[in-house]
Image (cartoon, rainbow, N blue to C red; front, top):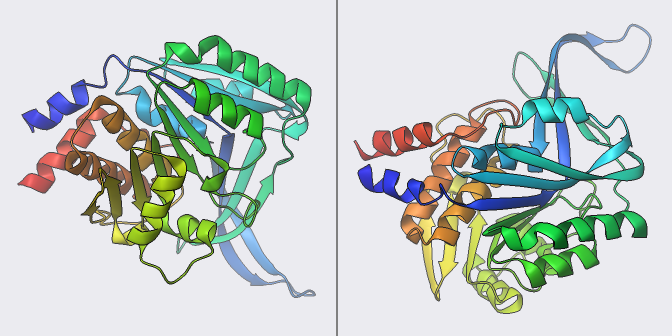
Length: 327
């Protein structure tokens, strides 16, 4: 474990920029009462509700305990901007910078949960996923150009809700010292949003389903598709996450697999983001691939064991998880 601590200490001096959509994840816990007396509607009684800083905010919180300085670049809505909540939810060493998006709220994803089974019953999302307009895009691009050279690592989590326009993607690819990218498939962007939006990234992390979706391919092995992706995106390293099967990394023409360590799965939201956050720090500082995958999967296991995206990773817990595994 001294070796693990040494590896994690490499991250101390890093300056990390995070670009992606800020999302507020709201969980409304309900008791299911039954069918309405007069209509074919399921009636739920509200028990409680919780809000968490999700999306790029959660990724920033995960890296904040490992790094010297962290900055977020995102958009917030013109209405219901949630700025106070966001600032209260972020770790002290995170700088928050945003542009304001017209005719838009800050993204709020509300999920209704059956409190007895913990199953999600319904999702109601309040968002405007149009691309940023020209004025907003220029403002974001100017902010990027002004600071991007100060950062050792740029982590992009692209949820496809309009923040990262083709122009912004181009700036990120040309100007980042080390670019780590993850694109997320969700109910709003399915069919329109894949990793092929990017043509040049140092590190790519995607889910197997998203990779197959991009290639419209159900039958080839994941290894064949990963090699194709590596050639197309010119990336040094690719991690493919595979849910409960674990993950697989491709680097220098070789594949390495790692199982999932999640003993308890409560909520899968944010698992891929957590894995990306930790593995990006590892790859930019040259941590060996096997150690990187181990740390990434242990971090993801910690995330899925808690409801929502409010659980922040910390260095001590990650070292303890490795210790427990090695015993």
